[in-house]
Length: 208
Image (cartoon, rainbow, N blue to C red; front, side, top):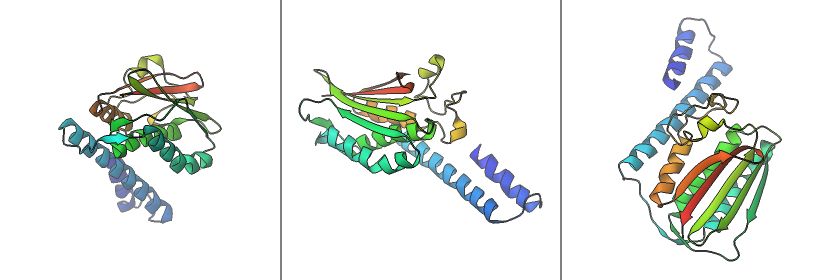
């Protein structure tokens, strides 16, 4: 689809149906950026499928990684008028054997997912807590939500949710598939459900 869109726009310019002006250049540039992200995501997934992604695991503080990512992305949330709330329920710091960079990629993909689909004026609640064997990170955002029949398929690559939370907002349907691969590479679990805030609830569980 991204290639077909670019081809269609270029052919319209060639045929004189559309004039070559600033708007046309901006539109083509945006299409190329989307195609570039798609290629990058496909490369990440193919490397992960082959077991070729580089993981440098060490004992890290996951709360600090998450807090740094939230701070880094808070300006984007402000611009989108989405309230960002973080609740750390850990009684004391925990050590997680993980790749800090890949963990950051996981968290930012989930944060970007909310940015892309949550209505302006909404909210994202991020909670960090633990069980005896697992570190648990919950991402719960406000409307729109995801239909129950779609929840089990959200982590499949290219899966399209045919509802208000749709691909019309951008993205190629690969971000959550990459999240699943990262979580599984850490022997963890990721799941999706309906959030009490009216949107999507994604739970990440990583072994301690």
